[in-house]
Length: 430
Image (cartoon, rainbow, N blue to C red; front, top):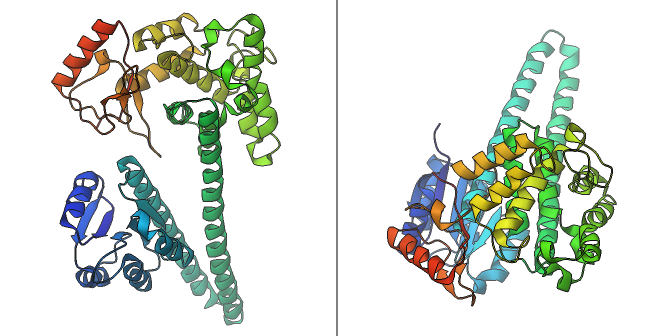
């Protein structure tokens, strides 16, 4: 399958080189530093994706992308912008000349993800347009058999085209707004729970991948992903002093109060009609596979699939983060503890699929994903997705570092010296 074509305009060669390194694996790139040359190329080859720097001497990015819009309105257009250009960027967004903007320095994972999503939207729009055109052509052929129907058919197709465009545009806008709202709430939850590791985003992406492995339909996969992002909503009603204590160190009264967050979160979310199924998933996360859990003592297949998936993923991630115990648990020990509860608390099929996911570390079909790793699982060439800090919150390795043998050796020495376990987060394997 050919790679999506992407035109990039930036007057700085260093930026073009950096973008080339990041994007050449996933996209067929056309790199330009002169806007007139880029426009001349685009006139002959209107590629689906275009990125432009905002501040350039010959022509600013908003003007360039406006010209691109005139040549091909279907193209998906992006700006690279610095903080000083934010007012110009907002103007460009409001005028509809760009699809998205990336602040410098950009995040590689976000950049690739947004571009892939935009290309999917572009191909969907093109396909819909083509099918509509085919439908119009067939209707026109039929109309020749009865000339009296020709005018009515043409009018109907025109109305259909206008309606389809408006509905598609409204749906995309609504979906983007909904996703922004969900992500904002997930960030608020992370702030309240004092989590800096992106726990709920990781739980959501892992749960989504498992649901995909189980051949769930797209709606179910999406609902499970949202439930992973928002499953800790009820913790907003719990004091941070309680949240900062490892779960296994809570007394019975504290644990009862703590475990109430599932029900509280479900009650809050079910007020939004579109989140009713998400709320139901969250409500039943504390159910046990053997039927001895809460709130309704459901068992096995009666427990919603999303609840069974998130129960395993969230517990595992809490173990490796040290939220379940006083100190982080190694991946090997965390797996052992999960396996001990198979058929009792957790669904054994979900456990097997999740452990396979952790071992193989595949890329996500949609969005981004990262995986936890201890030193024993590290390999040369692995890429860190988060900073690795020591006990004093000083960075030992920074986000984006490519792991080399001397890193593994040094971290191994530090683990032995301090009798600790380092948990790193790394990108999917190629």
